[in-house]
Length: 407
Image (cartoon, rainbow, N blue to C red):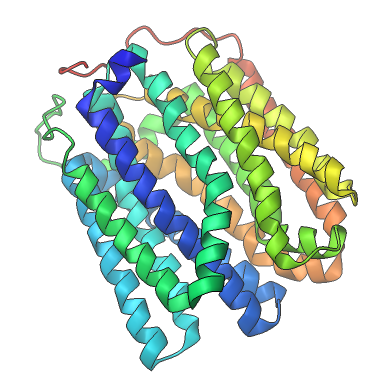
């Protein structure tokens, strides 16, 4: 672990992630609570927040992944954060001189830019870290997200309630700028021996799809992504109604459920770090999906707060297993030149499925109760799990590319 934190890239990317999470959580909770107030808790309006966040992923992920393989990853990430900040400040002007619905724009633009930034970040992990350090680095990276599952809702709710939507959006923009500043500390981009033959954007997109279809591991992972996306999209926009209707609490209490889930993620992330070297990523993925399917079914059925909190903790505890397993499997089974395009191919399968169910979640909630929606989501997780089982005992690839500069 000491060797990991001596790496200049690791320190810079983690600092950037901290600032980015501050901005994202302040924005997400400010927009959610603001829209709830403006629409009196309209389910369709609430679900459209999630559509604004995830629909651009489906549309731009493949294009962004292709350009990520063409562009220098460090510069790409810095520019994406800067442009996100600029768009956020534009939203403030729109709120002052225009309509409150401009808050959807803040989420929309950041989501589009993240499709260029995220695959570039994956390339940087492969560019600057030795093979044996990647899974440990991913574990810590996911733990940062888990910490903000606890701190983020508190921070976002506090900022919005104390200062309102204008200040919340401004803090988001400043946080994005600080993230960009941290990224400047990453060592300069270097070549990863990419072939220099001239190809068109369309040819590179086509070769990315062919690469995924040619690899059994990536195909099965893609089907797993689709099932998980359908499940998460079905319930993600309705979490706040789980609090207000199933548990009979005020909408602000959503932060406590997310905090318990986040605590589980932190502890689960620590366990994942300990066992990451001895546990293949596909086994982590199988375990995580099974546990989340069970936890999700309990959350949907429960009307008792402490039972719901235990189930949230279990889901959080095993969520790092899913995230670390997926990211490590992609890196292990993908050549460096294709990382952006593989991400750009697999991510739309996940987010496209998620957007489909997000788009109808509000309407389905009006027709059904929350319970069957959570149980269907749990069943979809099981379906996705079945497609990963064939890889359960597969050995880790021996030819995984490593960086030139090591630690």
